[in-house]
Image (tube, rainbow, N blue to C red; front, side):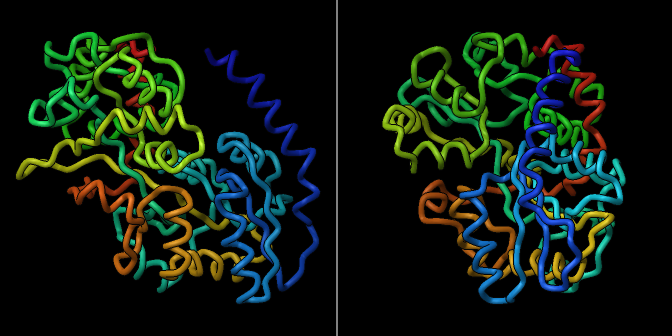
Length: 347
């Protein structure tokens, strides 16, 4: 599997190199260079507003998350990047351990962003967060039948669960959170029993799990909440119909339980940033209520700041208790999570 991943990753890096001139290497006081794993349409309008308000020009380069991180590593001190914006705390932790990030001091970021949604060493900060709940087919599953991630190993779910593969960072982070909560031994047993209840070999992305449930291939899907929002709000009528076939269940809500697993889309200042002050200003700008509202709604995610409400669609899903684990643990437990998934036969 590793060999099969190398060629696409190299191709992605080369593709990024071809468009890299869009990010200038010239040192200028009133600019900032951003490498973003979020698509241009999901972040550029916010960056344009920052430029209008601050006068600081933003040079944006978008690409695949893993390719951007590898690009940063290869460029070293010659990188033009001042900021890395990427998805999943597991990836942010990888960037930290790769030594490409820079710890920053910002009273605004520390005040605005909850402690569990930022790196303990201030090397990355969550900008929005998403949940990874259970989606069930209405009419086939009653919500009272569900309770927790752990309970999905029950025999009644045999052949009824859809989830994507073990090489997906979102599933790795889910398992990493369970390791933090229950330990390696219990999580290993859970993974082994959970795999037995798969309706089919894992394939496709999060939207594909929801579509599979809607088409009758399974009764339960595990997916990130922002994909569900994108399906409902999107123009694809087939995806919209599939999304309307399922409903959200927030797992692990019982008294004393840890809450539903959450993760972040985050930002960080790079180790060799040439415009550190401007980079910090941009990250701070992204925590403003107006920025949080736009960024969270555009991405179908939850704002990280307490003074900003989610979109009306997300509010309609109801409130839930989120796991307050410091998300740095997702990166710290990633290697163990991968090992357990492999032993469990999670393809």
